[in-house]
Length: 157
Image 1 (cartoon, rainbow, N blue to C red):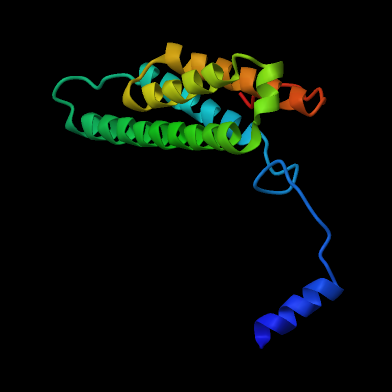
Image 2: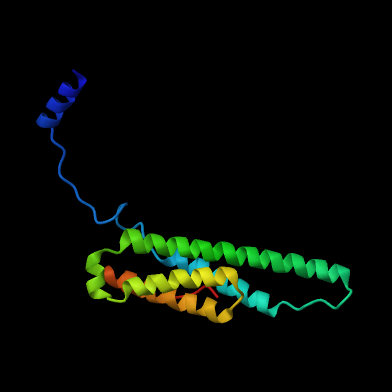
């Protein structure tokens, strides 16, 4: 009986047809969160490379060094994963087949960026962290071009 009533209501008051090109309302997606995470990866990588080894036998300095190294590494790896997650969301949820016509290298760009996120997690490489930022900048430019908007690329550091 309830199904019949609902069916009659739907017939009398039909819902308008809707469509969406993404999983959420337009404007939800933005590559800036990937940029911020990528900047943290680059910053922590540079800090790790610049970290001075303590003098041999200096226990207090070694403890401080190990603590700082561990903290920088944890932040670098966490932020690399965040960057990867944010990029994968853009790749799989925002970009559509029509965007491939505009950017034939879209899939390779995202794939390479995701691989760089992984590389930045497992190593301390300023080169790879810089390449990650370059890839995120390229994705930033692609994203905003699909919206016909000229949004400047900038970094906090």
